[in-house]
Length: 108
Image (cartoon, rainbow, N blue to C red):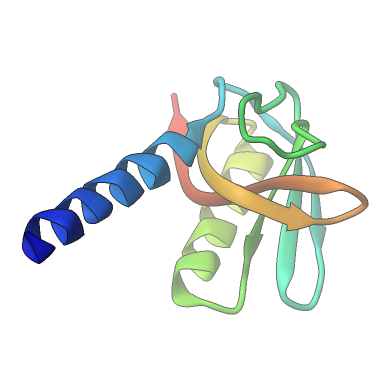
């Protein structure tokens, strides 16, 4: 019985985590703000459904290897004017809350 309850609890939390992830519409990066540990990107189309108060910005931590890869991709997309789409989960505090990015897609 205990194993069944733990399995159900695990499934419930997995579904909740999956439901919280949001994919942005296809957009372009219009501004890049880089701080000590975070980069904030102003985007043309807002991210909705994230539960964050400012959907026209996204952010990510640049102190990790994943964050550095996101930063490199974001700079490439910004300088070339490529269209992008973001995957976000959670919020970052920056004059309100903005979506926290875990994935960036560059679209030709």
